Length: 468
Ligand code: URP
Ligand code: ZN
Ligand code: ZN
Ligand code: ZN
Image (cartoon, rainbow, N blue to C red; front, side, top):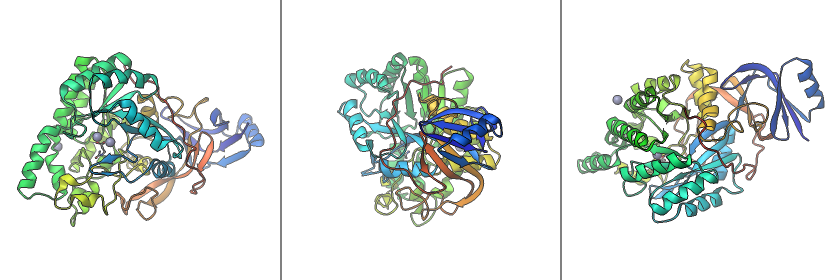
């Protein structure tokens, strides 16, 4: 039996902040005891390893419920593999990712899921699970949803955006929701009116408005709000819970708030890019704006306050990264002269915990709420709790020793994601990951990578644990 003790830190979970020592045995949390007590002192004596966390926080490993490693999209593939992307996640204190397996149009879900297992198998530095993207909701696919839930793929992403690629019509969405109402699955919606957006894209290009900033202009806030409203009503008709991904517009938050005021099981996710970046970035000259092209798009700065407020009022429950990196050179550049050809997505898996901690420093959220939106609620939402998302006896020993006082400057020169730019280049944040344990094994040791590809295990999930 291997024993590690993390001593002297402030243990922060979604529920508590306590000065406690944490005993780790065989990859799991065995016990917590108040620091300095005879119990805690006796652990230190018999331990194989003692980690001094004095002056640091001891927090659960982050759970990033929205990543796209090695994701074919926009005529290319996202630049992080499962190996490089999960290593970057570890550097940033994220010890579980939930990535999206993709159904190819005209093919079975099973085939897509098998392909994603093959990409990730023996590659990951931290634990991983899968959602499934439905690109072709047909009778066979609907039947397969039941099997997916049984084997731990308990959430399905559908799109009202990207006609001809991932788009589903309202009837297909309703059927998938009805099926998930019956089998316990959770429908995740990319909510933007893609049919209307495509009209605006065509008109913009015809008028010579081809720069990256027009990506933000044609993907109107109202078209996010409309699709959010519509899919909420479809979920009500189906009697199904609904999780809206990457919410960026204040008007969409208002739709979620209204649904939640009615007591509906409707949930919302936002991402650090919407909390920290804006259309100012999309307007950067010399095609630099392409670095910030993602969907839903970045919004005018005023929307940031509405998103932080939504997090505080629990109208938004989860912050994920939607990590989907494309290099500026050779990938984002595909859209020079035509913003609609810029591959959509931003890198971010490495910096979610830090940027949200900056939200604590800036007074937007409390420390416990930081852990709630970054660890505990994503774990509950996607059936991983309390194995993941907390520090409690029996939980996996996924622990981060976090230095709340260290300053760091985010930069492509120092980050570990396989992408040639940082969306946060030059930004100083207060707080830094020092040491990371994944199931008791040290993967980051005082800012040195000690993990390995293949340590990360596939983690089948239960159904949503966040329903009313
Ligand atoms: O721009 C984005 N968000 N790219 C990833 C695909 C998606 O829609 O989540
Ligand atoms: Zn999406
Ligand atoms: Zn607005
Ligand atoms: Zn995504």
